[in-house]
Image 1 (cartoon, rainbow, N blue to C red):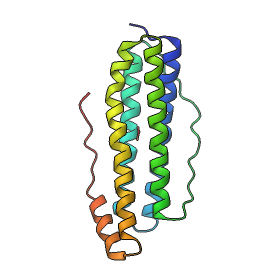
Image 2 (cartoon, helix red, strand yellow; image 1 turned 180 degrees about the horizontal axis):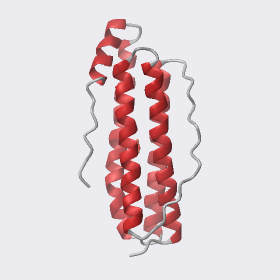
Image 3 (cartoon, helix red, strand yellow; image 1 turned 90 degrees about the horizontal axis):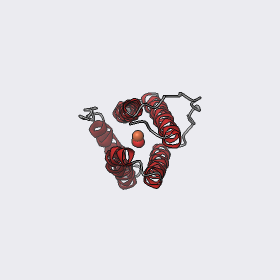
Length: 169
Ligand code: FEO
């Protein structure tokens, strides 16, 4: 089955969005490692791997439906942040953008009756719910912690335990 040019273009745009997200989280990881918050750094390195995994999932699907991958110029993410909370606010905003573009892709796949792509995207709908929830949850914890350094230390330790597990297709 060959994908329509319109959906092919949107799948390509989504791959580029996922690659951009990977770079966003790589720079956020660096921001934390520079401040000796290695647990937070680890959290964002794992998040980067998640985004690479998403990009590759789209990439493989694009080829399954005989599409052609086109790499775009990926913008450099903003690398200056005023606080830990600000980093997570930006990460949540990024996830909300990814959710929006995912939903747009679903909407278009239904409009052109591309049911294969529609079904493929179901996994990403659930994934985006989780990704947004993860960022919101950490933001809530940061709010509870406030200026408490021992709370920050404990959260850093917790986030240091995150590992990328990947998922079967
Ligand atoms: Fe690939 Fe975090 O969305």
